[in-house]
Length: 139
Length: 170
View 1: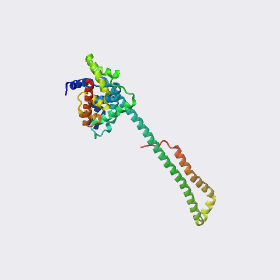
View 2: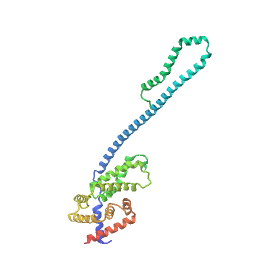
View 3: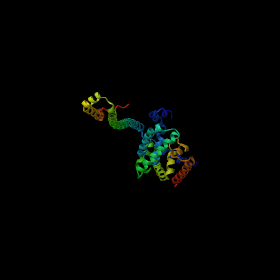
View 4: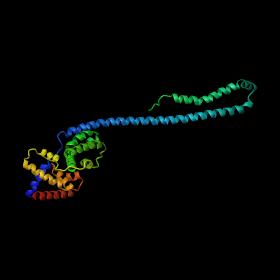
């Protein structure tokens, strides 16, 4: 290495050797990190709340659709029971003795009306229960 | 790495900071040639490192990983702040003065002239010169910082010194 080269080295070392950040750099960085850390925690909490809300809404929708399908089934059930009973009574009618026939003639319209009201009330009661239920409990 | 594995990221950063602060700053400065911008980038780099520490799997070495973040951040900052300043801008000259306030007026004039010569070097040569002459920097370290083979660093350094030597001799 020539004298000029070693002089060059010295000058370059003097120029760039002491290159460093300002004195308060670490303090500023640590303050920023602390602020970021707090922001991160707040953001995490907001994200968790949002996810919980989504989960709750999804669970409610699932339960609602389940209730609707149950209601449909219940209505069909009531209709089926009514048809079944009508068929059973129709088939049993010729074999019933006189007393029963007398009673049925006397109270027949009432029994039929009561039965009709009961069958019609099943979906209505189910709808009322559906509407008056409180919030869906989540595990 | 133990602190990273133990999820003690604040302590890990407190350890990384003294080890890498000057190097990251030097790397950012070699790209940006502006002290304030380089400090901002250095801050951003450490914030990014702190955020990304939970995902650091240790496949690359920590220094390589940090320098990659620093290079990318510097390049983004460089793109965002065109037109860029030069090493011989007044603010850079003030920074040079601040490095060694005890230097004589003649020495400062010489350094200012040398700084202008360094500024005129091709980008890669200028970066290698700046990083190599930072304290305790080896060819290998400069190669890792700039993601270059060690041989390339040596060649660039040799050419840069030859240019500077010739220019200074004129």
